[in-house]
Image (cartoon, rainbow, N blue to C red):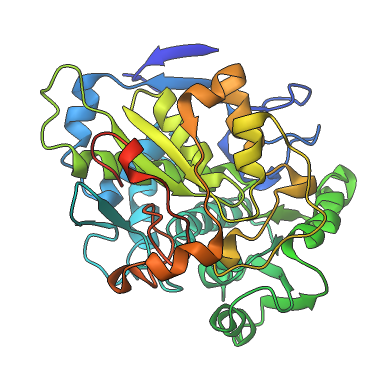
Length: 397
């Protein structure tokens, strides 16, 4: 793997498949492809290594400006000039309810909550999808093209994806919704949109089962090309790119000064379903951000078993829980766990811990003031699980 310091001049950022058998592509190619032609997922061929001075400069940035700096590292100016990039990101966040877009709330005992729910649909996926949709429409208008987006959802992604592209003239979106496996409000968010370019279908089965035909469609390269299909699920690299900003922003708000030697580590607790946020954290780690990732899952614990025991076997069924957006097994798609193993190799257990806890035992101990937090890092919520906080060191998000 190659590393390079922050570039002073323009250089092309290439993306390669996690399986190593597909041609490399630029950011535009990764954005529209979703899957590589060999069935893998796209990842940067090279990673910029961020030094202390860069981290210090970034530490005072607002969340939108931090996203701009990160995107400028991974999207070459030959594709989106910096002035255009800044405008796209500004436009993406102009409907968020909080003036900071993302806000860190401090609790007791060194615990913090990164509030990622201030978007239109109240899901943390609003953050990555609103930017991804802006990039998508930028290229479509420039190339005078039209695409059809196909999305499978376990809850959050469908409504956030619809909100990001509804009314767009160059995009149609098809959302497959597993009947009975999403919350009522999520179903209403998806099924009450009246824009002509939005098409929502209820399907039998759970989110893993509906992933199977979607995967089959996207691995048929000729079919995808003929019908101009693309995905906005977590297989899309652009979503992971934006989610990296969550980790940087959380770190900078938790650490009072970047003049300490060495820089202190921050525990970042990541509720995990398809592992997109986990992949983003791993990449931020590799770029030099001093974070320790604590992955939490519900009883659909394939990530826990994979990291702790190397057991990637699928359970017979996906078990319904209060955290419906996390009710997946990763299943036939592989999702972003493939990105995680791409970077970590055999060192995964040393860098990541995965606590889990049975759902029924957790909820009674969940403080009332923490219930209802949606899409945040801190897992002391009715949507996550409770790790053993006594085993975690340093600031925690």
